[in-house]
Amino acid sequence: MPAYMIVRVNISDMDQYRQYMQLTPLIVEKFGGQFILRGADKHILEGPDVPERVVIVKYPDVESAIAFYNSPEYQAAIKVREGAAEASFIVMEGLE
Image (cartoon, rainbow, N blue to C red; front, top):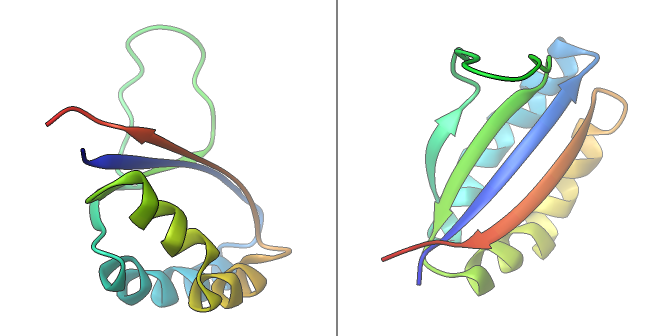
């Protein structure tokens, strides 16, 4: 079953965060991931707006998403992000 990684990010230093953003696409691809949404404009239909960036990545399965997150490459990218943003990562199994 495919899995979706939903990431919510509060950015405090966009210049430093851009360095992180340059590192992640190749790592995502290495683990079979595909960006579905990467910080697009939001249209709030109900509830409060939250000023966070939203990213959704589709992986072949939950194990691939977790392997991406735990990989040495991504753990190094996290260090580049430190001090520039706080993030929340959720992985959920999707529908076929």
